[in-house]
Amino acid sequence: MTEIGKHDALVLLTQAAFIPRLSYFLRTSLGPSQQKSDEFNNELRMGFQKIFNVFFDDKGWKQAILPVNMGGLGLGVVAELAPSAFLSSAAATAALQDKILPMDVAYQDDLRLETFRRWCTVYGDIMDINVCSQKKSNEPSLNVSKSKLEKLNDSPSDKARLMAVRSELGSAWLRAIPSTACGIRLDNGSIRVSLCLRLGLPVVSGYRCLCGADVSQLGHHGLSCRLSSGRQARHSAMNDYICKLFQKADIPAVKEPAGLLSESNFRPDGYTLVPWSQGCCLSWDVTFPHTLAERYINYTAMEQGSAAVKAADFKNTKYKDLNDNTRVFVPICVEIFGPVDKQTQLFFDNIATKIVEKSGDPNDKIYIKQNISLLLQKFNSFCILENIAKCPSVRDPEYCLLSRGEMI
Image (tube, rainbow, N blue to C red):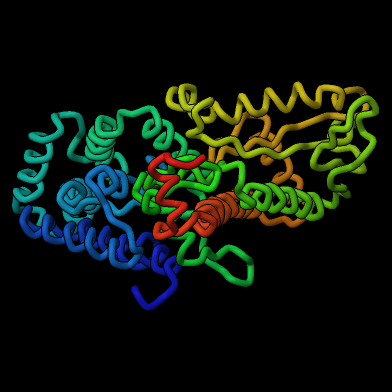
């Protein structure tokens, strides 16, 4: 795994080789002892750290073992998943066993009953022994792990991050199959930064940015630094991709049209040249609010997508004159950790529907979300790493004076 691209390694571990094989093993056997399970989990943890050049603290590892839709990576824990995997498999094959075994001999599956008793001792008598769905059997264990994780992540920034990465666009990149030809392969650096941002792990060493801000090991400052050229690059890449979506839907559009607002110099990011809906042409403007920014953190720690909602309200007010009998304005607000507001979600759903009508491929809806999610990860990484490249050397005397506050 260390010899191949990190994006390929991530897919092989979570979707193709390791996790599917582990799931099959757990469903067809009772599972290893607690000691063996702990040894296996430790090897998995150390191996993941070596492959992706990250360091897991307890909070990061507890998040990584959760499913993707809960904000994790779907790595799982053998000791916790083994009983439920075995019980669901045994329940699914119970009828077949009854047909195979002699009818005149009473047969009792003591191993299954003992496993079920041990499971009930841990999680309570909340499930019938005949449940065949491993997903339902896993729910109590996952809910316990989720509760433990939320107790560890009690700060506003951690709460906001956890809710944000559970969003659709915050997680879709983990399900994308890397392809260089299609432009959906992340480089090794982007994979490392994306994993660290998702799990709240250290991304960089602490340093002082050229703008004067002290940057923590999490590196979040680089995502929104006023001196970062990555912000404009991210904005342009997103606007280019939206124009490509209109092309796929056979809807001609222009970028940054002039003259739409006669009484101001504001220009939206794009405008369709034919009606979008109900005879009205569509104009749009893209923005990427920072989920963990100080002005949003009190809101995003309480509700997912709050930063996108507030950014959309601002855009709607700014371009209110673009809503009339012949035109309609839509803000496209995507938080840098993934959540979107309702208007943005509706726009992506509508454009995806129009593209599917043209192509006939229902998977285009999935591809669009994965591409946007990958674009976020790519430029989040670029913003952070580009910000580091601009910082002075720690050996620079001027930097040393700045770090002590002796120069302005």
